[in-house]
Amino acid sequence: MSRRPTRMRDPWEDLLTSEDAFSDLCDLYSAEFFEGFASHFNRNPMPFDLFKGVLNTAQAFMRGKWDKKVEYSKLLQYSGVHLIGAGMSARRLSYELRQITKSDRASQMLHVSLQTILDQSETLPLAKKVYRSIEFRNGSQSRLNAIRELASALEEALGQIIELPEEYDEERQSRQRAFDFVTETNSSRKQVLPKNHASEAAAQAFKPVWEEFSTVAYRRGRYKHEIGGYDCKPGDALIAIIGKLDPTVAVSLAGTAIENIHTQLKGEKRSD
Image 1 (cartoon, rainbow, N blue to C red):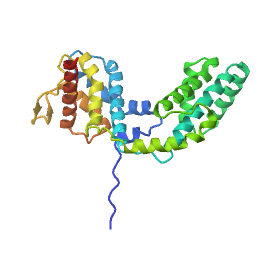
Image 2: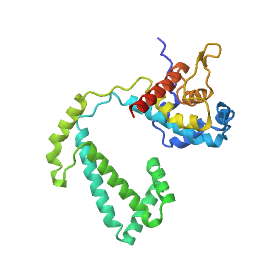
Image 3: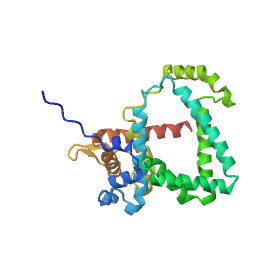
Image 4: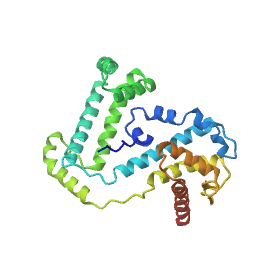
């Protein structure tokens, strides 16, 4: 009995686990992609002017795919315990780094050691990229502060998800509350996202680009069977962006996404 051929992954699936999504998106939307792309707009933009809008639209599509992917995911039994533990660890890290940065010598020792470990490691590619970004954008004395602020923000973010104990010795006492949090979260009714959510997210992100570079109204246009699509050049541009990420998205669904966003925004204006 022959096996079914393995389905090739769509680009968006690989991008969800990419270790350098920006570079991968740049490879996907290469110079060849932008050849003639500006012809979709009647204000004659330069391809470079469209670059940021294309990447923003692609990233919005990716976020939409991620939202749909986790829609029916549930917390694990100990997820609440680990969320609290991470929050307390982030608090401790933020505090200790603040104390370290009070000494220039201690700060330099940690920076040199951390940089050496990251340079020599073959198993920490994501950490290496993040720290390189910190080095590039921050002076020597402020690099640890960047990590400290991130730890502080992480504590705050986790605290908004689940209440963190005031003291470290109260962490064990919070276990039952953590289990209750998981039970309540998993049993709560979730808002079901539309099947076309990712395309709608892309259509909304693309709207400013459309309106900046085209005088054509933000509508999908009329469907023409002879061309197998809509009579709307900016809409074709959006479809081209989405098609690079997910070739399975039908032209009609991309057109529906445009119309749905148009309707939503129109309804919001009326309510205002």
